[in-house]
Length: 408
Image (tube, rainbow, N blue to C red; front, side, top):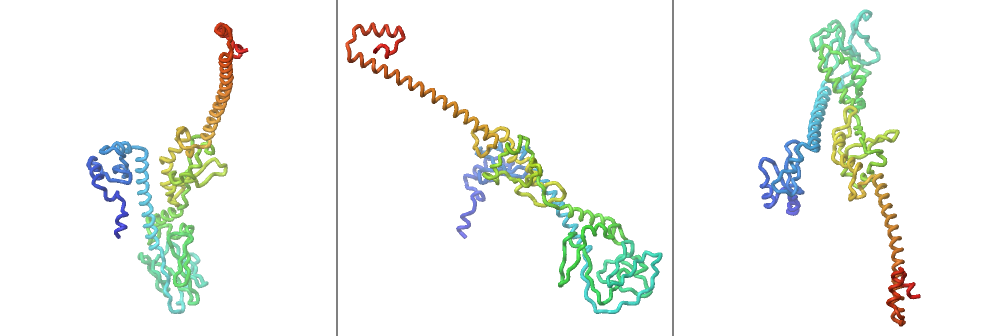
């Protein structure tokens, strides 16, 4: 336990010296001691901004407020709140309609004989024909409706009243013969592929197409139009959920094949904040996704994290370096064209240096020969008594003669 307490970061409990430094900042701004020093809370984007080494100065915070980074953080926070609110509403509607339209499994009953049915003339009536294959018949939406999970037996002479108070001229559900059983159909989260297995029997799920053609689509006597509208909206929202497509990389610095620093994804993949996710058939447009991509979105637009890449600082730096890069920058940040330009510059410098070396070699050879002649002239004077040597040297110099000519 003592070892774990000693491993706590120092930023949680600042020292006396750090507290003294924090006390020198204005009390109108909330400050704390972070990993890199004092930090101030921006009241616009709610982000902690490093204040640097200037004690008591809020210059870094003032420069941050209203900047593109601050505006981007504000936009991301607002869009995130909207997305969370929409997602909660969708889940509430799904849960609400699931409870409304889920039909519980019918309890098993003792086999009994089907009652005697009245003879109904269906020639000029809307009464549906009674099926004889052992399945139940369901009335259209304009007939009486009952939400009871158990089937309603048919009497011989009495009409059946619905929950809404209307009187029907024919039964809602006709009991099947004892030898035939069938599980009811139900809504399950509005998913076309959803299935439910209960007590060893598999239930059928209503697909999205059947939902649109369901009799309750038009307002019936027991389901108002607002509920039908909410049902259609919920189904359409769920149907539009799909994978996030990402965004198209906007690159105005030239051809992306020669002006984009591809090697950055190998040297510093985490610092960029995105990765390539697709390319079109012609190979001219590239799609990128954020490292924090949500994965699924409603509609054809990208998620908020992917759309925030367009105004991110990392992508802006890539574009700026593609246009103009400092000659003191590391070669890891150069693109192909910039590396070619630096190679041509170095080649020109190498050719110039080689020419200078050749000229220096020629000068050195000339100086060596002159020094040799001077040494021979000195040796001749030192070993021989040449008469009138002063006059001889003076005449040779006037005629621009070298030491070699004098010693002949």
